Amino acid sequence: MRIFNTLTINTNTMKQFRTFFIAVALTLGVTAFANAQSKIAHIASQELVESMPAFKDAQSQLEKLTKTYDAEIRDMMTEAQKTMQRYESEAPTKTEEENAKRAQELQSTQRRIQEHGQNAQQDLQKKELDLLKPVYEKARIAIQKVARAKGYDYVLDSTIGSGVIMADGFNLMADVKKELGI
Image 1 (cartoon, rainbow, N blue to C red):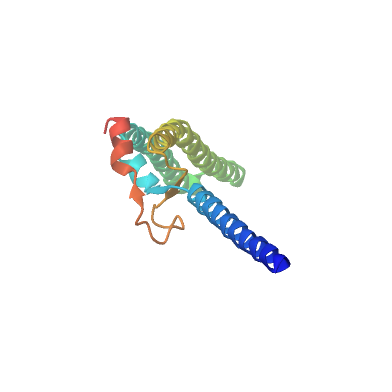
Image 2: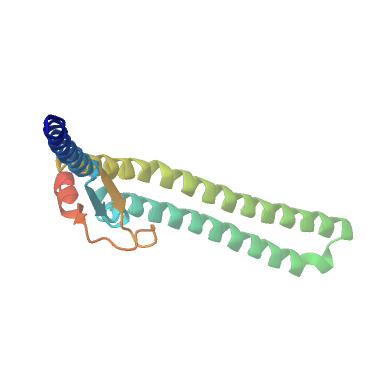
């Protein structure tokens, strides 16, 4: 009988220990799961950037520069066309050698116009980068600041075409605009 009582006590102790162990494991698991849950928010970053006054100013500057380059190229082409028409009308009275020189001159002018157009395009791209980089950086910093203040671990870009299919989580747009003063 004594052996039976000792086994019963040991079995009961083992059951209690197992129950305690399972309870501790569950508690740790739930705590780890809760801590592993990341807070996620979203924002349409392109919409935010486009609403910023600095972006609108940059767009305005780029439009002015584009118009300036367009006008320069248009003027160069108009001048080249006038020269070509004049050369064509004078061609019968000129020697073949002079007409050949004029044709080369027109080709050279055409190349200069094309080069000017390419240089203008490159300059516009560089200017766009110079003007918009600080705007995007300011938006990024504001998004990070607001997300950290609100305790978000991740912020997804919900701009159309950015890869986010559904954005039902917290939208940071109003808070970030407030941070930027817009």
